[in-house]
Image 1 (spheres, rainbow, N blue to C red):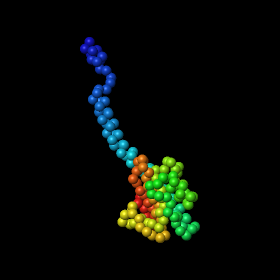
Image 2 (cartoon, rainbow, N blue to C red):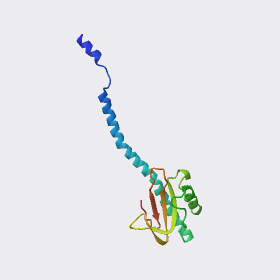
Image 3 (cartoon, rainbow, N blue to C red):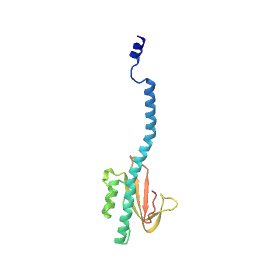
Image 4 (cartoon, helix red, strand yellow):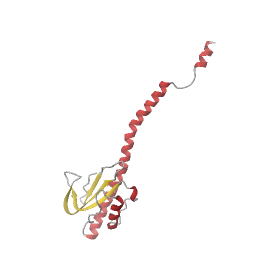
Length: 157
């Protein structure tokens, strides 16, 4: 009779302590995974700028070979990315960075300027040369990023 009573009270289930331990373990895993995920997102967004700037450099070299000069200054820093892309594409039709309203960066070409060796965000006069600049648009994961590449393939990325 005593054994039957013990069997009836032995219910299958989780205690409050067991549930709290599982929740704590899941919270620790989430705290570790979230920053890594955000880092992957930033790298993916930045790859847009890197590939477009490298493409612009190649198009600039092609333009130089065909016209004897680099593309004139095109676009304005911090300006509307759709307008800048349209200005660049008008001069260099091969520049196709993607759909205008979904771009994470605004692009600009500055003629007769190169990246300085001491400060990759500063530029010095050099003729003939160019600097292609990608400035992150506000409101995305990489706001504040500025990347550049010049005629000597010097870059800050």
